[in-house]
Length: 276
Image (cartoon, rainbow, N blue to C red):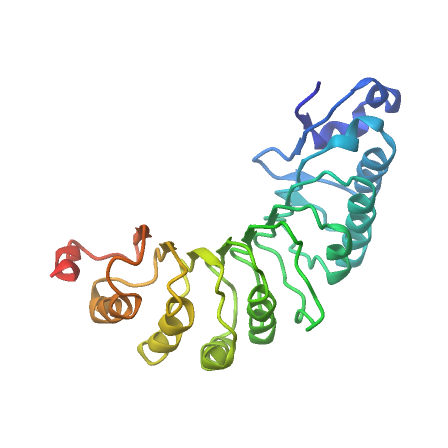
């Protein structure tokens, strides 16, 4: 069984070769950026749809791609076809493209078996409609570094609130205009809570003092979050805000907490002040 193949090398492989691979479990982009033309992308999609070896594909990663010729509509159409044909994919990542794209809503129509959904550093759709449903078995959603509008993020949380099974959510380092952040934080008291959310990553998203109560009560009042990542949000000048957030979370509620800093945002040796 072949377990990994360089996707950028697919055009160099003869088509008949794939008919002799019985199982293919991982299609993974290398860490460095790879350029794909429109014809290379179409060849890749055609190979995935026609070679028998890909029928058992479970982990599908399309990361770090430079594809200036591809439109969001073209990529979405290709992925709809892929997931309609390859029914065993459990982990899908389409992340960190040089030219971010939008994976539009039709993508989700045939992804019921997905467990992990990773769209990092992409552009989110304008909003998720009320009738929209995420994959039934998915338990990890990673939208870190994505570009959002307030309405999109609000509609995302509304749809995630309908999930009945425990899940992990990464919303770190979101790209959103200041006015949209204000609109989003003001909307939190009216949103349904995420009762099955168990792990939240909110790193890099600054919260001003005026919105801290709304953020804390929305995410932590139901006591469902066990692991909270809050890196690069507050430094030594916001210790009082951090104490206020901890008071909302409550004692002995979290199993794990991350408060890492960066060169620009850190506690400058004053972390002991928080403990006091």
